[in-house]
Length: 305
Image (cartoon, rainbow, N blue to C red; front, top):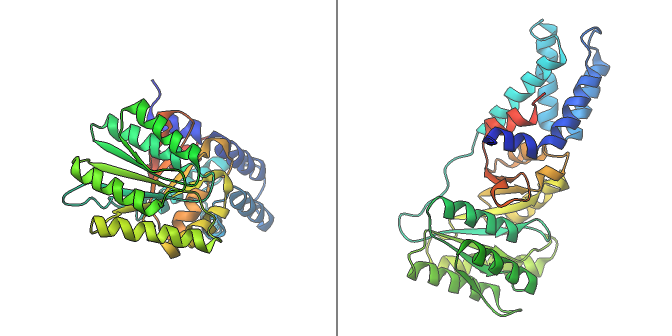
């Protein structure tokens, strides 16, 4: 039976293969490492979307340790990078904001196609397996297909879904979902929202309205606002995170579709620049392939040889 580390390794295989092969092609044990070596190494790390800040810091540490004779091989570089990235990701991933009473309300936001609706279904599946009662709020009222998709998830995992008519006021649907979750003593309410480009002012204003409406019905809610980001978009995810953060108080990230990308390093770049906790990562298409983020497992899988 596959371990959790195996799941991370499988999901990050494309990123890992690209990253490790690049490092091994740049650094050989027989040649002295020069400025050109370090420049190529930095470019390889940036190419995996680890971000300029992280890549530069890693190369500086590698250069220092090589000059002091502490490291000598490509395998040593991989080990240094694994430890450093694990340390970066391990900082600031605190506990979720659970309310003292009533449902924990989680608002999922993001651009079109990031995987919010699927993530909502997978999160509900995960928590149902953990014996928690879960409700889904279908507040993507722009796409009829989104409502149908989340209803299919609800039927599949025996999870109630609160929805409205196509084109209905998303804030009103969110209000109804919170009311229903409170009356039924639900543990977790997941609210799916319509995908919206951060450049569309009207749509971002509507998102702010949904956020305010939830708070009026349940003071302190939403307790968590998670930005769902398609990991294959690489550093574009940074722009999304910044812009959504200006409209709603983003408290964490869900990185999806990492299994289909060689840009898994973006997880590190986003966390380093914005200090946002990584809550879940999508490592495959199956219901169990959305996994709670583990910094050490992620770092070990990312730099596995």
